[in-house]
Length: 157
Image 1: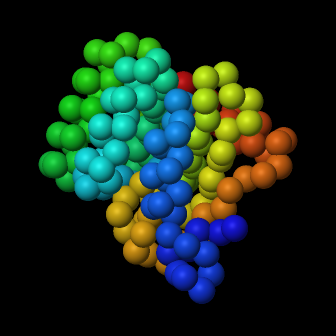
Image 2 (image 1 turned 45 degrees about the horizontal axis):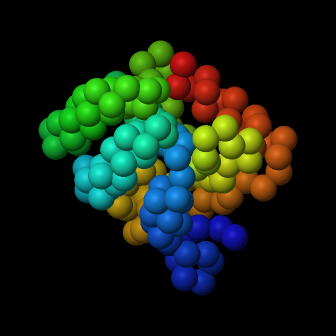
């Protein structure tokens, strides 16, 4: 199945992201752009996962180079401070050595060796997840999943 935000060719990715965040304990999202409204929609879930011993990692790939809107910056700082106070490996990350414009979503459980991984064009924003014509697909192949997870670990290091 693809997620395209077009009923003729797949469905909106937002519903899938909502379901996966609610059922996962290890969430990694790497996106070129984010939006304040999407951060606000999932902020409580991020805290719940971290408080329950899970891990939330969010990488904003273009923020260092293009900046962030004031509300988004303030919300990211708030989320970062709260996640870091909960301890663990959760947090907000920013690429500053090179621009990252990819979009990767990984949802798993503690020590999960087979998470759900989605790769495509959908930014972690309202427009990317439900409005723009996008194309994102779930990775099924185990070798490719391992390679994408290794790449995510590299991005978050």
